[in-house]
Amino acid sequence: MACTLDGELLLQSVFDGELGFGSGGSEHGEYTGKTEVTPSRETQILNTAGLVVNKNIKVNPIPSNYGKITWNGSYILVS
Image: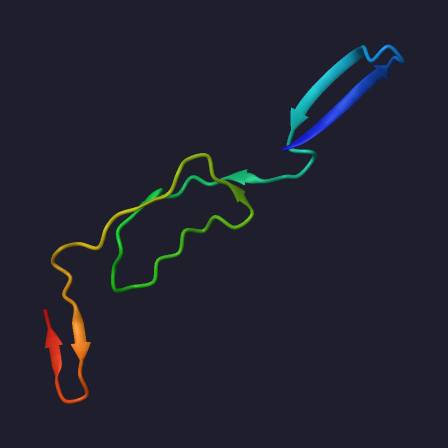
């Protein structure tokens, strides 16, 4: 967030003018996509680059129906 100052600053440390907070002139749009994601076998991309995200992004736990696959060099074990 950028801060802009417009007015006169007197020697007595008193500000006379306007104080504004804003984006500092940068043009960023707002992210309006999904903000809750559950892991899947496919890559998921939330296209947030260059955008302002106003909500937390929640990543859900891996669903319990997903199996764990291990390879011991001889066989595959799915648990």
